[in-house]
Length: 149
Image (cartoon, rainbow, N blue to C red; front, side, top):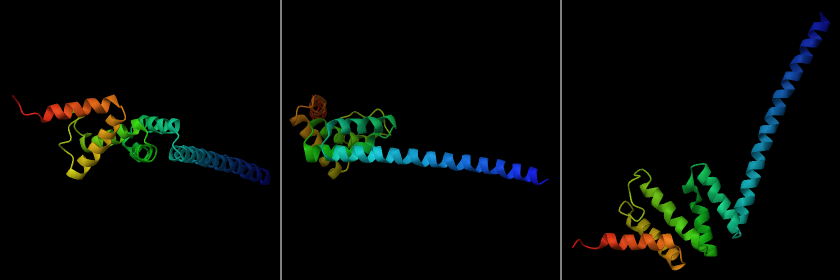
């Protein structure tokens, strides 16, 4: 009888240890992900363009493109990285227009006055720095404001 109890206890210990090992592995994986994120954040905050583009891709893959706004503003304001100006505009545009897929990329009619002013600043800066998409959006905005003939 004691042998059966001993085997039962040994069996239960083995099962219990495997569960704890799995929990440790999951925690370790989570920590590694956090370290990678922190490293990328640090690199972007130092102006690393490759890290910025990687962060953009990661958020895009997760379907959370709007989350890149912070990084885009940092790269635009601090390092004057031309594509980041357009990224800021696009993040803002999506924030106001994502529910309507038929809205044109130059349409700022859903923006409040301050947000429109901010979006236009970043769009114009992108165009000044040679971003062709920004130039095209500005042309379409101008054409859309012309009175009908």
